[in-house]
Image 1 (cartoon, rainbow over the protein chains, first blue to last red):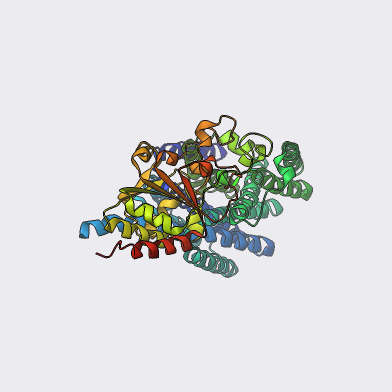
Image 2 (cartoon, chains in turn orange, yellow; image 1 turned 90 degrees about the vertical axis):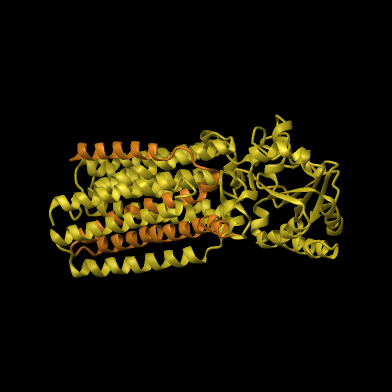
Length: 98
Length: 473
């Protein structure tokens, strides 16, 4: 099981290294913000903790607070990235209309 | 639910996340890619819930806690995302990022306190917990410090800029290690856990606090990469492959982005992390000193010069963003354009406080994308430029970076605005820039200072230009 996980870690890292090659400076901020939202994927860990907690109140509480933090990151991150990117995509559309 | 379906959902989610990150690095596809990643995230959550519903079931108590956490976090996140002004984007990313780190930390904490409940016993689980707590705590405190520094709530105490801070940080790192070893030796002892948490949290502060504001974007990007690592470690703790892949992907991609940003600023990652604040060495070294030969002028003179110009280049900086003057600026440039004057914007790679930040702000003010020119493109054109209007930018137009090898700015790419015929610098006062370094540009013969808030100066300028009969067509 553990070795399997290590493979997953290795392949995931390699994939991440390959994904971004050249990024125009314009997109540095949105890309950072978007990647940051994805790192809120710890929602999965938080949910797992809550579901497995049984009647252990401390774990339930920690899991729930953790879920809140993670979702704050995910929802806020995706929305704010979208807000930024909406400003870029507006331009070409208007030019075509002219 | 069959394992097959679970793996299928996870695989699709990973694929979409990867495509999302990839798409975010191209202007055309960026917005769709962001939405794709959001869908992937929703899919992953849905898959996890369906999987547990089909196997162990989810108790009603668990649902209550899930809904409570979702509502609080989701609503606060949505409100924050809607409310924050575009100017404080770097701080916002730092805040979100810190919360991601905190989330991983809390899950690991729960697993460490109640290993039986979460099947997190054995050395592998303990190592995962250690990594998750360590990286999570550094990400959290580091991001919060970064946010506070960017907001101006926090400045670096003097002792933090001395070499002594390295000793303190090394001591904190050693303390973290001791805590980690203690946890491995005796999993039941809480001492190791609390020591690790406290020491790594303080280490996050100790490492981030001395870093100068100009380097902060790089640090946020690096911390963003850390939060990916923390997520991957949390994946080991709860045994989720999807979490490991996604965390590793963000961690690695974040590292590449950090490197790209460092290249853009001509700084090495090592000097960002360990070099400390740019201004730290200038108190005694070269580059400091008082201004002796400043020419200031009135808005009226500036308007007259602009009227006679054929080509004008605007250099926007963070001061423009702070004054919320980008819309007024757009008005001014519209008037100039209507009089047949050629207008361009020179965008330094780190204009604003983060690469790409200024592009976002100007796009918000309806500045045409084609008028935004990058540094390498516009630098050779300055000698043929009549007027340069520097708005709230400072370090990025400091000629010291090319002329004075003793200057801490030396080697940083700058805009060669001094090559233009006339330079107007709009600035609130004679205070130093973000790096705390004196700007030689202000003393040059072809430079005039226009003191005042950028928005007010531009507003006055607009009136003067209209009085001169520009923009009446």
